[in-house]
Image (cartoon, rainbow, N blue to C red):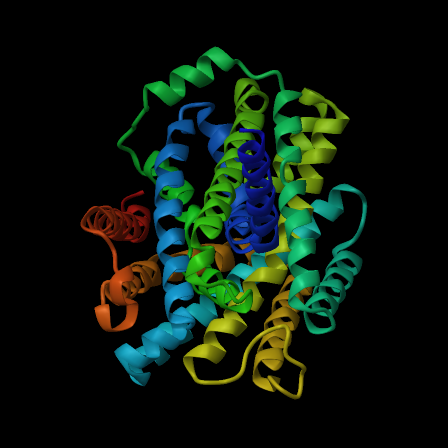
Amino acid sequence: MTARITLQKKGWWRNMLIFFALLGPGIITGSVDNDAGGITTYSVAGALYGYKLLWTMIPAFIVLLIIQEMNARMGIVTGKGLADLIRENAGVKVTFFIFVGLLIADLGNTTTEFAGVAGSMNIFGISKYISVPVSLALVWLLVVKGNYKIAERIFLVFSVCLLMYIVSAVMGKPHWGEIGTAMAHPHMEFNAPYLAIVIGIIGTTIAPWMQFYMQSSVIEKGLKMRDYKYTLVDIVIGCLVTVIVAFFIIIACASTLHENGIKINEAKDAAMALKPLAGSLASTLFALGLFVASIFSATILPLATAFYVCEAFGFEAGIDKKWEEAPEFYFLYTGILILAAAIILIPNAPLIEISIWSQVINGILLPVVLICMILLINNKKIMGKHVNKPMTNIIGWSTVIILVSLSLMLLFIPLFS
């Protein structure tokens, strides 16, 4: 009996060591969801509607979990990136148009991240002409001069730092009874502003570039099917972290800004408005969270873009490769960073318009990417016995239909506003 318990303990420790060794892709990909655009969306939702939109966190979690699992499974089984598989099965012409659109959208998204860096550091009295170039240099050095293991560990630390939003929310003294009611009884309004916020919350949970980054990071880490159960745990934790952070950002703004009738346009406004309502510490933590999320995403977004564009057109890619081994990958990564940062440094740059149009392009391309994914993962020639189960397909196609509907609403709601 004692020997059996000893063996069970050894097995438990072995499983834990394997899990921590494989930890990374799911948590990192999920955490990048909470970028400058995401934090802004959640902040505005809390400030405008209080706790009423907290129910959206439940479908957001389900959607993210389903898509990320399919992504990881496809990467593990095929050993190929999503871009590679799309090119091989859809042809070069279709691939070209999809990825030109994605490249434009991701440039706009990366620009938004540097806007988050500039806004958060401006709260501490640091000019964007200092914060943006310094952040650009640090991000570039991490990827170009580092390696995957170092970068991944730093990214995991960034993911943990986002939990500071929980502290910021608690300091706002939220009404937990009202929060429970809002979660248990979903509130729905059929007007353009409310629907736009709902679409924004669900839409910011899943973006086209995430699908390519997740699959590429699984391959970069060298994961096999024997690692699948550990990868699945990694994905679940990543999805939970994402939704928990979003949940507490909404609470932080609902319990302070909404109750005092304060309206905001971006996450920086929320950080500044929290100071007289919840104290200097809550305001500082909110601003630091925005900075961490922005610089985190400013690293991952162009990295994901460089990955999938190079994969799509057959170029070498990967941060474990030297510059001379993957010049196209590093030139593209560097170019996106420099161009995005340069746009932010232009006086009176139309940042809101850039953010809106990048999200519109994301909305158009997301259903296309997801349809490609589900068709590929159900192809037995590609996936063998690891194709989707019937129930997974039902959930997957239902998710696509909902996302297509949301994307169409995202495009048409402004016309009726």
